[in-house]
Image 1 (cartoon, one colour):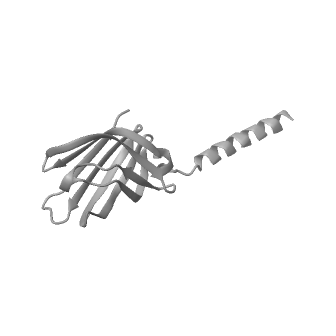
Image 2: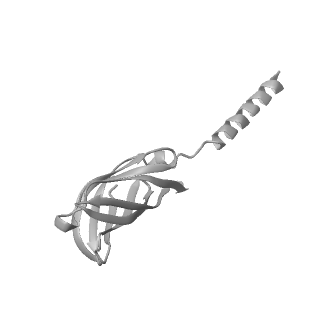
Image 3: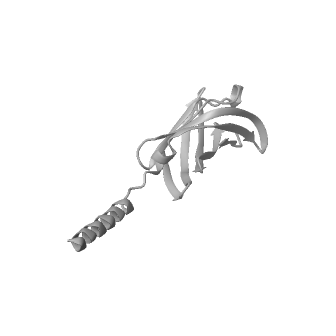
Length: 149
């Protein structure tokens, strides 16, 4: 009887290990949340402004997220609130999640804007970089966001 109990406990342990090993990764859900930090806007390596703000990552499903970025800038350099959808999220290691480069395009004040966004979440800190080029402007505007712990 003791051998049967030992055998049953062993099989249960093996089953628990097998089930935990089959756990499906849900990287977008792991980084879902609000990140407070500083967003810096630059053109040709010259800072044009900075904003202490909150950027929100929201899981759309297990592998993609939307990114909400609040408005920034003034006049011709003003950028409206942006929500970028369908950003692929992958888990690179235990505490590192990558946000793959994703195209951005929108119209604001009758001007077409184009660019891309990418970044990562490392140990619960968000780093984002995105570029936008409004209309015929000869250079892009670079935005860099780093959250505080």
